[in-house]
Image 1 (tube, rainbow, N blue to C red):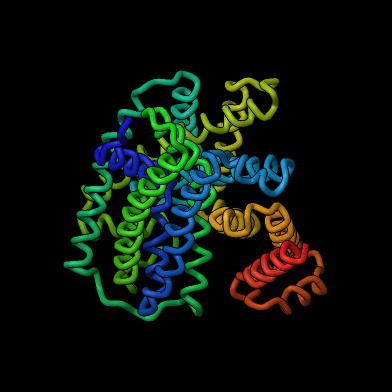
Image 2: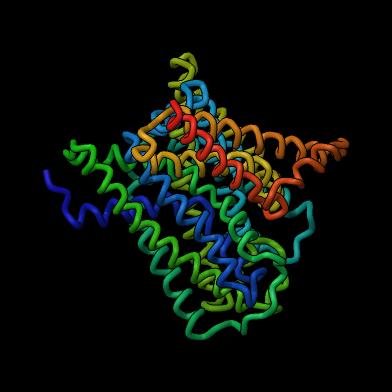
Length: 436
């Protein structure tokens, strides 16, 4: 059966919609503001981790057989279960799901409050998240095509709306580029791209796209991988356009924006360019996009952890637990969620990055397990030590000796301490293969 260009375009936009609804739109404007005149370097770093890596992740999963566990199993079966579980938790109840609710509140509800105090904000957030997760759980426990159809309509409309904002923001800038606050825009942009969590999500979304292509009657693995790669390219192009456009608009706001919150920034841009109506439409559209994403993510968690427990835990039980945990974390607020996510993502991302890159060169080193095991083993150990140091230090534990040792690593201060050890590990593994 042939896969038409129309099918490819629909698949590409479906993948874009998956990436689109997790609240990632809040990051580029603030990145632009803080990069200022160095916007090019800031957005370049962000595009690498926020667009390039997700594209590679989707491609890697497709070429590995369409399953994250198969991809990670190249290291070790136990590692496969652990890293898959961590990935699901990150894009599930620990980070992504509560962030969808917190983002919806910041963009759609908070701007409607008139000079609220902290108690009013907290109570309003509580009420908002109760309603948000009640709707989420209802649709998760009673699957329907309503949300799927809503998503098919909503995503194109949101894309058109964003396109209007971006084009207007470019033609009539809100201001001029001002000096930014980032000391190293490229490194900061690269690390800020971690917050999108799209590289982690890509290995899950890649599985969904492969299943969708297979359902169309395509059975040839090479053709499935090729179609998935092209769909990934379509999604990546859309993401890049949106991220670059929003970052540019953020950079031109300069001193006009007096807030400090990512959600406030997006709301401010909508109002500044399209008035109060634009702000309301943006808030509603993003809330619905986040809601459809939250429903999909809760359902995915229900299926995964039910299967992981050999169905001792039912789908409904896992879905309820996932929703409750997400509800509790969402009430910490967007700023705290982003703060909590930093150390966890700095642990997970290097492992995912290295795993994806190695899988793309799988045939080059003939799939030798030692390359995966040595490289991933060293990187995991390194980022684990770094995470222990950062978390321990934040809790007031004296880990100065560990900190001193970590500072000897090249690029550590930039957040890239894992890069050179990863390269050296691959070289050593290839040398061992050659000698044997």
